[in-house]
Length: 146
Image 1: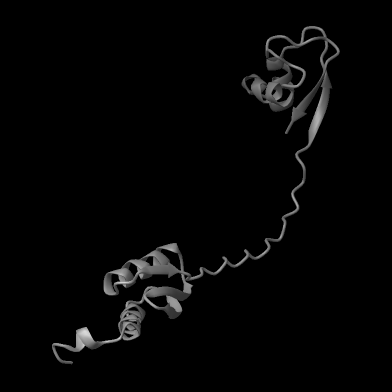
Image 2 (image 1 turned 30 degrees about the vertical axis):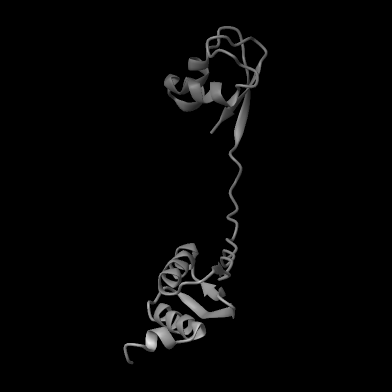
């Protein structure tokens, strides 16, 4: 290649040389090509991701002086995830307990869990009818989760 070759190369030759250089960069781009209309270039092909797509555009614009460059590289849609077999899980079982005179959540917890300190588990399971763990009423039916 002589000194004057860079001045005598056609615009399309410059585009093709740039594409060859980009193909050799291992950016994860397949089918890289260009449609040239005057000094407007439309880059085509498929990029592995947005980063590769942007890198192709950056390098191409550094190598070739165009009036405009359109990055028409596509990015493949991600493969749908393989369906996961649904595991059959037994729904948590719970018992109902009717509050009697003298009951406290701590006392009920002690009956069902052997530990009065687990009263908040009962309270949380019954937030729809209880506003305060210290205020339960005779006759209320409380859910007792496992």
